[in-house]
Image 1: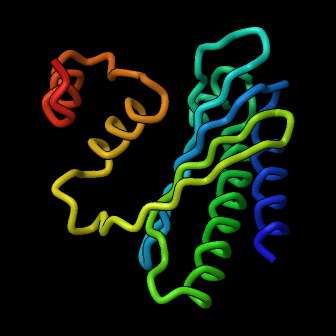
Image 2: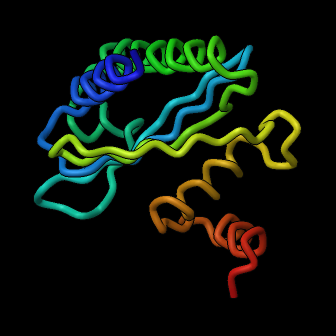
Image 3: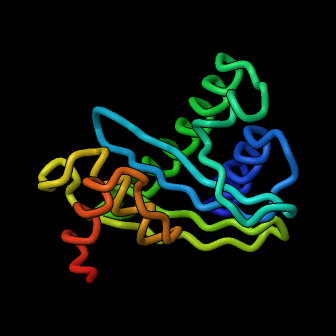
Length: 153
C-alpha cells in the first residue's frame, strides 16, 4: 500500500519539474490545519539546487499550473499521512524525501510537534535547508541565526 503511495508521489514530483533532473530533496509538513510542501532539485548539467517555488519564473511555467500540481502533491502527502495515522498511534508531522533520478529514494520521518516549536515556519525552512542541502541563507542576519541555532562557529 505504501509503495503505491510513494510511486504516486514520485510521479507527481516528476510532473512539477519541467526539465530533466538528477536529484530532489523535498520537505513536507502535514498538520491537522495546514500543510506545506517544497523541494529543491538538481539537473544533470548543474549541481546548484533550484527551489521548487522558483519554477514558474525560471522555466516560464504558468503559476496557476504550478500551483495546481503542487496542491496535488500536497494532497498525496496528506493521504500518506492519513494512512500512517490509521496504522500508528503517533503519526509523523514532517518528512524529508531524498529522490534520485534512477528511482532510489529515502524518507526521514520526523515526529516533532512543530506547532509547539520555538521556531516559526521561515526559521524551520532555513534550518532544514542548511541541514539537508548545506545552503546558508543569503541574508547575513538569517545566516547568523542558523549558525547560532546550530552552534556553528
